[in-house]
Length: 405
Length: 205
Image 1 (cartoon, rainbow over the protein chains, first blue to last red):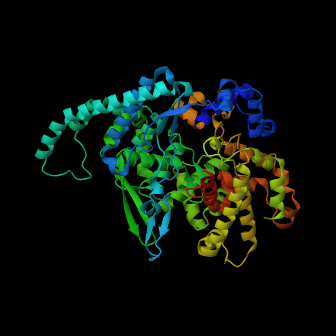
Image 2: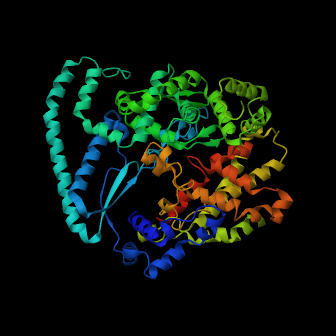
């Protein structure tokens, strides 16, 4: 990872204008001239500046601190936001302690495997072919994710000093943390004794409790707001579930987000591309997972013959995230209500067909219904032509097709 | 591997992948991690072919619905298999030096300045507006490799596959029609790409 930091700086220095040629017929010829050999040759000849020199002499930056490789462990889901907050505060303490010695910071935020319905690979039991469970039930590997891991680097000449600063900062943070938790532990115990029953899963905190939590953890809200896109997306998820009388499944989330973005122009920032099951962006699944990790949503698995299904409902932190994204929700309140009323009660199969029709309409701009119908039929051949026609008619009647009026 | 695939591998655009390491500078930590996008791409083509054959062998009932066939007529099977293998072979031709390491230096999409004011959030712009290596792969197949695909004698004799059929499959264009079914084995949770690199990368690291 440290070499990637240097390489990026070196390439910015070596490339004319600091970036690669464009992927058009003119730019491609020049682009093809760039390969590892050329870059290494230029570095060997002394080009590429200080960072090239560091690579050549192996005086590359050294990793001095890394946050936990996955912020929320499954067992910590109930405390999700608090875990994020603690980790973020610890990181900030270390960064402040390092000061100018901090040479570079990298964040790893890709999870390679999405454990939500439809993406979690179904595994057929060896002994019982009727028993189908998601891969994550069997494999610990599927649960390993390098999400939101922050990595801090310093120059090799600063390692000794930096190590001490980091150790001191972490020790200070832990001490402070213990002191804080001791201070807060007594009233908690008293409250626990007075509470006769554990609240049910669907329990939602009162307005007063929410306000208390808000004033207690102002940084938590700051953390959520630090990435406005994710905050807004999670707020929309929570709102979709709250507005709907149905427990929403993964397909519905995917397609409702697609409709909101495409038909209502909502700036959710997804990039949908077409699969045989309709428009899809794996980021929706990543966000659903994060919503679960942060206790914004919770899912239950329903098994049925031939498969399983996840359904989502809101969880304890849904009101908080909705509060963080309230401006976005207010701006788009009508769109969300509309998409729930129009689509949320439809089956997954129906949503796949409708979203495919909308996608093809936008992409191919057919102005004749038979062309649109035939193209959709090619993609979804198990739907009879009259069914496709009737759904096109319905979308037209709702003025939801851009090119087929 | 057929003669057409061999000729595509011999094409200078594909041969360039011999000079693009799969794991960038990872060899400074794991000295054997010197493999390139060249052997990875050939591996992905191989795995995609195996997946295709396996699905055909075990799930013909699903495919019959997609292709409106009784499973006996074989012409479409060979043609679809070839498209899937070529898409797998060529999916990474657009990689920049050292694979992913300098992708943040890809230019911003669209004419200069366009679009930025339309976007609400700076982070959204950062995330979404730059070209990706997939865009370079599509452009290279469309422009630099088009003749090598469309005018190849093996192709002309057997399939008459055009370059846009490969790019439609890779990009998820509606024009791919029923072939979109196979996009799952090229780009999904556990696709031919991952099956190859998880094995190949773990062997050397």
